[in-house]
Length: 109
Image: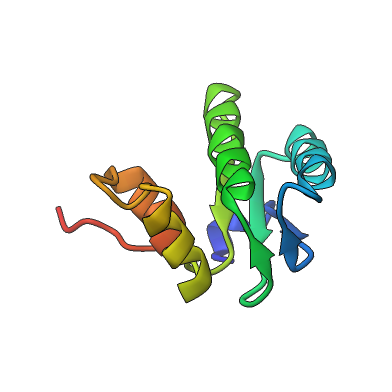
């Protein structure tokens, strides 16, 4: 967390990020987002993850942007998450904001 993000709230997620747990994850993310301006999400390096998680996070990013808030990941997507992003088509023609969000890659200006 940078010094500019001292007011960010960190949400530590459990290692099971699938359709079986997505309702609980949704509640955690939205509850935290309702309370803060900047939400940092810590995604475990190893665990179970499926497309429902990616869809939830993308929807939360849109909601946050509409409310003038910010969501970020504590660290870049793990290899497991990158593989899922690839399989789900999220890496195809990824826009710069998504590249920064998921991969922590910034475009040179």
